Amino acid sequence: MSYQKEYFEAVREAQSNAYAPYSHFKVGAYLRTKDGRSYYGANVENAAYPMAICAERSSLVAAISDGYRPGDFESITITVDAEEPSSPCGACRQVLKELCDDDMPVYMTNQEGKMIEMTVAELLPLGFSGKDLNE
Ligand code: THU
Image (tube, rainbow, N blue to C red):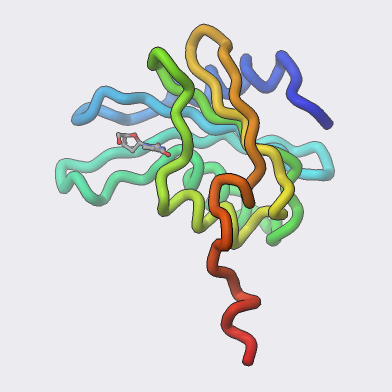
């Protein structure tokens, strides 16, 4: 299904749970499964700064922990408070590549509702995957 207004409302709600006392940069993620379930994610920071967990991975880890498997996901919507929507970091792109279809849409938004859509493969061209491990 294509981008819906309800995705934006949901991702903004997810963002409100961000724990970002160090960067003050709150990120929300709203992951939808192909069978219609939803998982919220938010960034969770730590006084040991590199331990921060991004919103995108939070939502994916929650869904996988609940029993969903690679290929079960329909879309992910991300939101930030910034002039422009920001895109997933490199680590999140690799995890998206592992768990999501190459053509799965990633909807990147900001607080004004501006939205940029790209697929997982567009965000990580020539990405490394399990296929590369087969000889
Ligand atoms: N962050 C995310 O949650 N997702 C991204 O893709 C980029 C960065 C978080 C990590 C950290 O808590 C804060 O944003 C600033 O980097």
